[in-house]
Amino acid sequence: MKTIDNIPTGKIGRTSKLVQTGVKVGGNYLKYYSKKAFNSEFTRDELDQSNADDIYDSLKSLKGSALKVAQMLSMEKSLLPNAYVEKFSLAQFSVPPLSAPLVRKTFKKYNGAYPEELYDKFATKSVNAASIGQVHRAEKDGRKLAVKIQYPGVADSISSDLAMVKPIATRMFNLQGKDSAKYFKEVEGKLLEETDYILEVKQSKEISEACAHIPNLKFPKYYEDLSSERIITMDWMTGKHLSEFAKENTDQEKANKVGQALWDFYMYQMHCLKEVHADPHPGNFLIDEDANLIAIDFGCIKQVPDDFYVPYFELANRENINNPEFFNEKLFQLEILREDDSEREIEYFSELFYEMLSLFTGPFHEETFDFADESFWNSITALSEKYSKDTELRKMNGNRGSKHFLYINRTFFGLYNLLHDLQAKIEVNRYKNYMS
Image 1 (cartoon, rainbow, N blue to C red):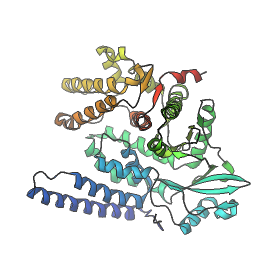
Image 2 (cartoon, rainbow, N blue to C red):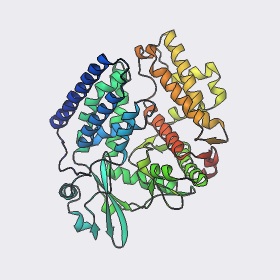
Image 3 (cartoon, rainbow, N blue to C red):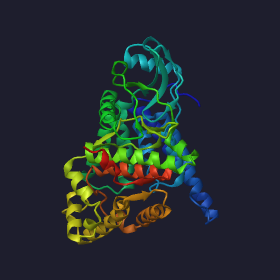
Image 4 (tube, rainbow, N blue to C red):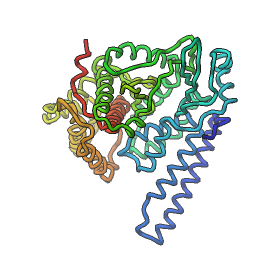
């Protein structure tokens, strides 16, 4: 794969790159409408593919939060056309890496020494490049290590990158008024945390120690003396990315073993630690030869405050969902319903969230749940399509829900997708065996 010798770090350079992309996208629309004029049956598939290619090519050269947002969107399989999902999913663990000279320069800037001065062996060629950083193999004192290096300028460009994305997101999700600022602040805060590698090492050690007793779950050891604000050194863990394992695996017992470890890991964090690994994409998990799950990235950890946790999980109870008075009370507590809503808005959003929660909390209503069940996924797709085409919804204020929904919903939706990829059948309440 071609390497990158420089990354635009200034606001002007990054903005001009996105403007150039906007011009390309505009040209794609002109081509589409020209073809459509001569053939009314011409579909948007070619347009979506061209736009996805051009947008991704731009973002992968910028890296940082712009590419991270694409990675997040790739997990929302019901939100975007398939062309975008496939292209943006490359941001999870397959983007052009920094060149060897830029790696050495970056390392010297962040750690005060070149890599060969700190490690016995260091491979300047990256083995894994993603949105915020890339990983290299190294060795020291006989230990095989993974060294994650953050791309130059990522932390400094987050605010300006999000400012460029904000107008698009505001239109896309119909956000209105000053209340929408809380959602952008939440994303900005989490992205800034993801660039603080000292915090990531601290979070990694805390969660891996707290979850070490969960069966079939492994974590690397972290080395603080070889880490810094922009570099992390940890044990090299051998295994396949979860997506690769899921594609190749034909053993249902192994799929269930991995899926159960994944489910127990997330439920334990959510219900016991009240904080959760909120970036559940395949690039953050490896599967070893014994079908153990290895969690390797703790940059995005979401705290779950009680004033959100309690009403959120009260609505995972089928009896509560089917109690209209109780249900609406919780919708107000979770900021889904607002005091300034009209009667029609209250009626509309109560119905919408009743449908959503009845479906998405389905796994919690069973003793075992089979994530290979296509009827479950077909229902999710049908519900998504129903509301994506609803013209009434587009006219209503999209500021719905506590800011905590952003990462908690992302966590559950990502977890469900991983379990579906695995085709795993899990015991829903087994995690309670590990709660003291």
